Length: 211
Image (cartoon, rainbow, N blue to C red; front, side, top):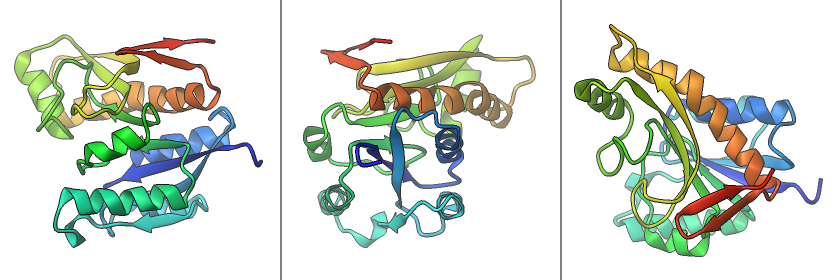
């Protein structure tokens, strides 16, 4: 459809969150949005295989080919323009982008983080490090957060959160899997749907959902 919102998904690794989005799209649950391109920062990311299996065009823009973050950001911005991006989703994207992108796409970039922000977030908190920190702290609840991306790492307005119980005997790997299955894979597609249906209103640091 001509009025489909074009969703660009940024990946760096296995692409489990991308798969959750693809599955939601196949069920017609992205609210008139369509994943039009998957961009990877690594040429060997398995997420690229997932995209190709789903018939979604891909691009590889390796971070190490660029001397500076600014140059990498410019290359990514050019790709976003060429793809007519309406929404940019960071789904396990392990590369920091320059603030210029946030200014060019205000409240149009979302990220999923495997903790309940503001806990266990910011610089250095990614992947298993997040779950290691949660277990070290002894929290009883963790979870996932989908938020808009701004110039502060993990600091943008929160769209959705979902709590997940920490269980006795959890390892970082076990907890990571539970948080993905019970939270990330549910709230990321839901946040994309709400965006594509025009149901998110952002005022300052607050997001209101109009269902």
